[in-house]
Every structure is written in structure tokens, then in C-alpha cells.
Length: 475
Image 1: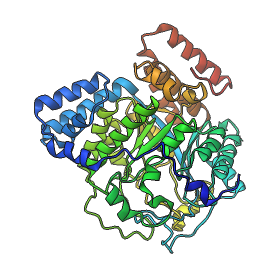
Image 2: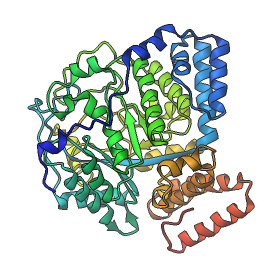
Image 3: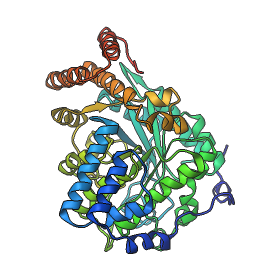
């Protein structure tokens, strides 16, 4: 089906904006935390119950150092309880930077005359994926500007290419998408290509602030973007990701709005977002952004911990926008996914020199440029299990089915064994010897700590099969 502008201007009366700024500010202004209330809220979260907006506002307003420390410790305990010591790894792959929007904070914006516009050819896309597979990547998120060339059919086409590329033992087992909102029909086309998560960030949930930053292009329509994931759900995509770009507006408002969005999705579709992301405003090509809402490292760490407590079972993504030292710290307070070995210059995985040339194709500046193996090595030093697992998606454990497994906490029975198996694959196929030595120690320690003797024996048998040449084994 050919792209036409009309496909993006169909009004869907079933879906109305659900963010009420007055309601959110009322919670922020009128909620007064006490030690007793904060501790009760943390206890509720540790019992794996979702928090309401008033409770989130209470945590947001807690400003004494001792209470903030208790919030962070609670988030750390909750993360360990639900996710164990594993961290899921992925890589972003930028397909094209053409864009019709003029978002003031973004290097892709149409008014940025310094940007060199480029879209990967099919051949270049294959080379990019082969380079990622050579490093051991199994999970990608494909990123596109908002432009008529990047239609649902084109997105589906690139997804199919990504799944088709096999090099040695390398393959991409899950392709997520970060792209413009679609209509219901467009989401159906993309779903048919076999995507994982469809991720759309509202950037800022405050309607007036949103107008300030988005004055041109389809993205200027606040309501159309806000209801995008409702249309995705209508199209059968039950695995979606939300996010806010912290620094555009008051972070307290954005935290409550993210929780409100998660509650909306769960109330309407019986499943909340699979992931929440919280990038911070960073330097971008040609950017001259003046805002009074930049978020300090201290507040950023606090808001991550609060979101972990607010939505216990939702995955949380921290990207390479943040420096390595801060990522290592914040991982402890609730992060379940990070990108590794990230390059955002278009074509830069295959052409390493493009990163050094800085051709202004990047959407923003990254601050953690560690190679994937270095990140894995450092995670292993912290006794964490780097994971490339994609089992739930291929076994239908998504949407409501995922909630059936994850909300009672049973998902941990699958996730840790699958993380171990994907790490074992990486150690066999890609790791240098010093990383392999660390990795096997972490794997053996993790298996030894398991109480289920039958599961321990099963994992050992699957590892034996992996060492004999089998691949892609999971529970």
C-alpha cells in the first residue's frame, strides 16, 4: 500500500486524550510526604502492587536525604526480587534521518541545515546487521525519522531484512521499532512483519510545553501522538513502549504522566507498557535549546527509582545518552535493559570511520561509547547476567499472556535460565578468553544458587548442547 498523507489524518473518535494536567499538578501540590507514608508506599511496591498517582506524588515530593535513600534502596530490592541480577542488552540501528518535523531538541529536525540526510539502502542495512551480529547482538531497535519514505510498508520491509540476515552463528531474534505514530491499518502492516515492541515517546506530556517544542510537521498534533499506542493495541500490537524526554518540562509532572499513561493502557487493554524509557535532553546537531527544566543526576537517579517502585513489572530502559559511570550506578535502582556498543551515525556499525568523521546524522550525542564486550565484561564484574533473551516473544508470552506470567512473579523462572543460555552462546561464539572465564564463573554461580534441582540439570544439559554446536535453546 502506497503512503499518502491522508492515512495519517484519519480522526479516530474512539481515542481521546487522557492526560489532565490539572489533575497531575493537584497531586503534586497537595500531597505531603511523611516518613510513615513513604515507608508504607515502598512496602506496597515491594509487595508487587502498582502505585496510584497520589502515592507516586508522595514519593516525588519526598526531599529529605534519608527518605530519598529509602526510596532508592526499596527500588533496588524490588528490582532484585522481580528481575534477579540480569540485564537485557540490545543495539539501536538508525535506518534514516529524513524528517518533516521540527522538534527543537532533535538533530533530525527539518530546520537543521547542518544535517546530512541519508537512508540506508537494503545492501547497507544488511552490512550493518552483519556487523552487529559479528559482535554478538541478538536484539535490535530500528529507528526512523518521520517522513513519507518511512511508511508502514517500508518499516515492515526493513524488519523482514533484519530477520533474514544470518552470518555464522549470528542472527537477529527480535526487532523492536522506534518510529512515528501510525493509523490502525499502518500498525497492522508493521505487526505482520513480526516486530517485537513498538516504541513511541510522548517527549513531554504537558500539552502547552509540547506546543513549544513541536511547531511543524505531523508531530505537532499532541493528541494524535498521545493516542498512538491505543491504535497499536487496536491493531493487535500488545507489546508497546512509552517514554518521556526529561528536561523539556518539570520532571515531577512527567513521572506522574508516565504512570498515568501506563495505568490507561492497563485499564483499556488489560496490559500496561512492556517498557518505559526516560532519555534526558542532550546536545544534538545544530541544537540551541533553552529550557529551565534540565534534570540533575541526583534527580534523575531519584525519578528512576520512583518509576521502578510505581510500576513493578514494567521493563525500564536506560540508553547510552548517559555516561558509563552514571549508567553503572542507576542500573542498580531499577533498570532492566541497556544498549551496548551503540553507534547512532547512520551506517556507522559497518563503516567505523563515520563515527570519527561526525557527519551530523546523529539524533543526539551519546555519552557511553563502550564496545559491547566491555559492557558485558563490566556487568560480569558486578555478578550480573547479561541477557540477549527473546524467548517470550517467540512463545507468545506477550501482552496479557506476559502479564499472566510476570505479575505473579513466575517469569523469573524463565528469565534467569534463558539469560544464562544466551550468555553461554555469547561466551562460546564471541567473547575473548578473559570475558569467557568471568562469564562461566557467573553462570556456574547462578546455577548453583537455584533451588530447583531438575532445572539445574536441565540448564547444564542445554549448555552441553550449546558447546556441541546447537544454538537458540530456551525455556
